[in-house]
Length: 86
Image 1 (spheres, one colour):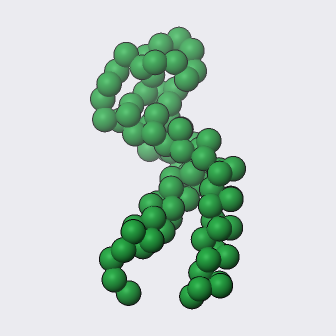
Image 2 (cartoon, one colour; image 1 turned 180 degrees about the vertical axis):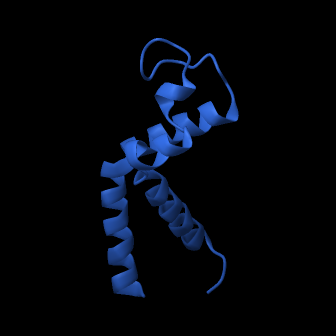
Image 3 (cartoon, helix red, strand yellow; image 1 turned 45 degrees about the vertical axis):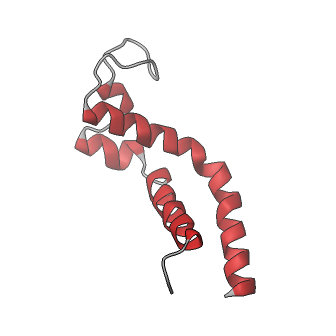
């Protein structure tokens, strides 16, 4: 098992899966990493005046939650390829 493009793509898919399943209410709010707490604007999802690392991480995790539907398709493709070709 060498380091190949396929292995790197699988690793990226696993990390994206991990970020996409983080629940904002149960996990992230306890640690203070929510988009609403990181944003200093009055509306949810707007551009944050605060460009701190915490705000950027909160925005990244919020954006990853929209990847759930494409991840279902990509996970299915990876499972089929691994099943057929080992």
